[in-house]
Length: 423
Ligand code: GDP
Image (cartoon, rainbow, N blue to C red):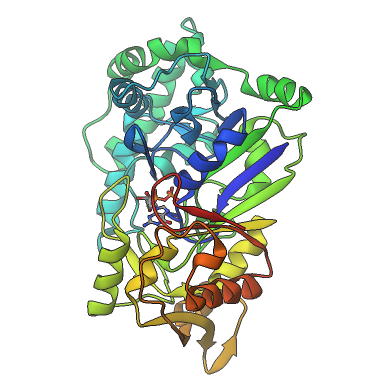
């Protein structure tokens, strides 16, 4: 069985927490896109873990974890992430972690270029995480990427790095006027952080195909959400990768396999990191209260997130592009403090009321149309059955389910592994 777990909104929906919960049913967890530009937070009996690159199944001793060809991997960051987990008693070896030989390495010059460009843009900046993601994906499509498999080819790697560095310096030195990068430094960096990774690098597509053939259960874990997808998100305020479930088999290395089910992680309110239109945004004290209640600060960067009420228009679009077959509603407990819960039920664009998610200028001009739902004003974090929830919480859940036209099969009422309701 092949299942994708994906974000319906702007990311930070609580995917890591749901993958950690559900991964006990799966033999393998695969990351298929992105790099260390986002973070999954997982809380379990061993402590609190922030995973930027490693698949969330790494915290379970029996799960095999795969980093697919669709990923871009900062090997220095990966080294530190693995060290931090090892320190907390998580065993990591080539037995439970496999890295695609076709994944691209995010080099120090990608981070540098990310910073140089954001600084050049000034007030018009994209709100990049400055972790080199856009520059490294650009290089992938320019066919100037260094792949994990290159680490296994010591004869050809030096020349490859020298040629690429020469080309990069055309932009870094001549374009941005920055000091040039040095090929030997890049080679030392690759040796320092790459050499120990060699036993982990393999053809993960072959591995996954073989395991799928043995009826192993495979979970594809996405980073970010539908509204950050490079094609379907709020361009150009998107990530540089395909986050949608349809890309999962490609980014994992098994393009011939079909996903059986897609679980969309959908948050009970909205949050967004970075720039760009965010129609349902709350400001002032109202926004501050929700941000504090939800602990909405970036897992990867610590940046305060923008917050707002649940956005029916954007979420319905997210459900559609993700092809979600079921939903997990997260962070419902966070809304317990609200007497009236605002929900953005439609957009008003140039006086026209619409339920369709617009692009470009029309999205910039969109204004939220709110409806207010009665809150439940009580702690729901210990509820483990739907019937235990207050009536107003049930109404809120049913409303979202109807509007999304998709079954809600899980409700998360806390960050801990057991704090959820299965429907
Ligand atoms: P991800 O990138 O989608 O995994 O999301 P993040 O890890 O950035 O954000 C989710 C945050 O909310 C983490 O701190 C989780 O521990 C926490 N979280 C997830 N689900 C719930 C929930 O239902 N209730 C509460 N209170 N916290 C949750």
